[in-house]
Each structure stands twice: as C-alpha cells, then as structure tokens.
Length: 231
Image (tube, rainbow, N blue to C red; front, side, top):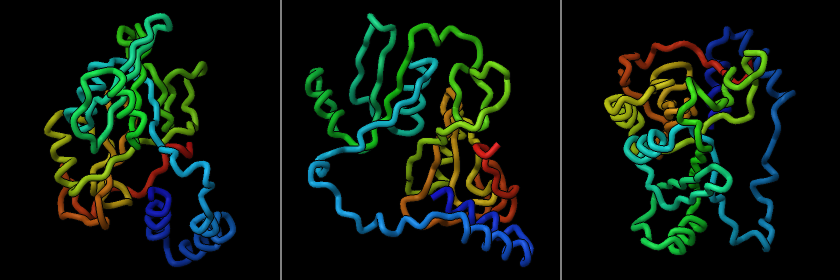
C-alpha cells in the first residue's frame, strides 16, 4: 500500500516532463507480481497461519500500556525465560476472552493471525535513551553513529476512521509521526510506539480525507512524500 501511494504522490508533485521521466523509469524498474495472484497454494501449507511479528522493547510496562490502551490490542499470552534473561508478550486484535490457563493461552495465541510479539531482554529498561534500532534511517546501536538503511519498516493497523483514531492517539499522549494530512500521502498516518517503532494507521475502506487533521494540517498542506528508509 505504502509503495503504490508513495509512487502516485511523487509523480503528482513533478512537472509534466518530470512525470513522464518518472513514468519511464518506473516502467523499467518496477516488478510485475501478477502471476503470483493466481498461484496455487501448496496443499501442505493450507493450515499455516501468519501468526506473529516480533520486536524488541526496552520497557515491557510502557509497551504493553501503549499497545493495549492506545492501539486496543489484547495481551493473549506471555512467557518468562529467566534462564535466558528475557520475556515475551503476545498482543493481538480481534480476540475474545483469554483463557485462564497457560495451555489455553498458548493454543489461542498459536491460532491467532497477526500477533505482535513484544520481547523484553532483562535490564534494557534501565538503559539511557533509545535501545533498539527502528530500521527507519536510525543511528541507534550503530558503531559509527551513522544512520542505517534498515530492512524493517513498520507495523500496521486498520481503523474505521483514521482522523478520529489519530485524534484519540494524540489525546492519549502518543507521538504522531505523520498526521493524516501530512506529507504527500493523504488519509493515512503513522504513530510511534514507546521505542520509536512506527505503526501505520490505514482505513478499513477507501482512503478518504478531511479538511483538518489532529495536528491542524490542512488537506492541501503538508510536505511531499519522504522515504526515510532510502537514506
């Protein structure tokens, strides 16, 4: 989603000649994935579940508060591994009651698509400043202090109304990285979690815009598209 919207935003910002040059470059460099839409799923994989993405977090209390109270996830399982100095916490959307017993929580977790696994390495909560590199033009953890071109980009959620959701996030003290009218891509947003990881906020339906967003940015305002990972 982000690539296609970004491409449109960049092309629209160019002059007619610039648009033509961009279109010609795109014809030569984009990849056509059409054949994969009709590809048959291997029979042996039909019960597989895309169950989790894992991120490391500095402070589990701060992260769980953000993901549950701000983004509306539910903690569905956790496991402590003191022998290896870390704990894991699985949060998810769209689940009902969480079982009281460990085996029940394990079974629920392993069958729930789209969990986020928050991994806490003991002691990180006492370190100064940011601990983990977010992957987006970030110098955290580098030996030379230079920003890196990371592979990780962001997590993402969908909501009924992006503008209302972002106003709520802001009211709860969350950091809005890109408001719905900011940048070249209108109608979507990015919010930061306590470690600085980006969470994209997309609508459950077509991209729509409103005159003003939570940061007071007009729909015809905001700078052009900027890809931080390309630095």
